[in-house]
Length: 390
Image 1 (cartoon, rainbow, N blue to C red):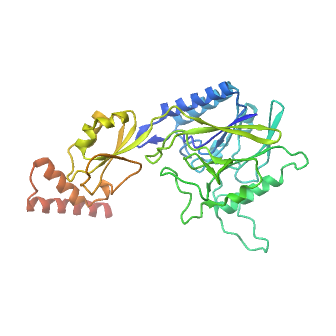
Image 2: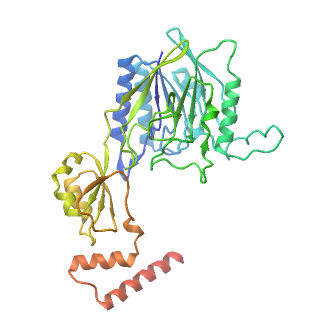
């Protein structure tokens, strides 16, 4: 039996303000081609199917198109909602969809019922747990001494996984897969993952997944194994969704027989626009031929110019058509352009508004503003802030 593990499609998401619809469609088409070429029996989507709990019409249509493609290619689909999804909306019509080979496990109010998937004489049992909002699901069970347990993601997830595990038919053992959407302690996150909570209460102990032949995780966008095990992993998102996601994108191809997991392959995703962050003065970024290899990338610029430049984004886009993000780095003393892997320095909007306006006027007019002009700017900003506070 062959199974693809994927997650965090975020259908409907935009990169900065740019549409990703065509990139997401290209991924879904590629995934369908892999199903057909490799004889995949089951595709597991471990949450964050959509990017928003109330997806746009175009996003719904694209997901519909993608699921149709996977079914036409020959795979059954099993998916759970993630923290970006609405469990009730994505679970609408789940019973009817299952008749067509798309199994949606979105019930976050009851214990997960094991689902036995059979193909080619082989079978696996899935415990598929939708994302559980600690304050939107039943309270965690009390401790053995009767003491109440706090509403954390770990506690409600542990209860659900334990309950699903207890329902497995131990008299007829089959390989088991747990599907979950969670932040497992020890994993590495990217900028684009939205925190479930603060103070570490979103983390879950990897030990609560003990005993499964494979654990298919979603939520973190970086593909990674937990504890160095091929049988416990995040597949990662199919496309970069922030400038920190410079790592390769992939899905995981699993092979099972009656004894359990027999092999794992990583299938690199060949579609989607890569990301890069470039640092230097505006003239350096525009003139360095070494940057020609980034013309097809999403580009974030970190300008080291000591003064605010005239129309910097328009000038950058003349060279880098997909430049979408620009900030000024306060040092202003870099020796030359460099490539970095994340944002550096303070954003333009974080600097004092007076300083930005004064620098812009000085650059535009070639001389420092007069005292009367400084007073006029201060008065205008004061009036604007007073209007906002009113």
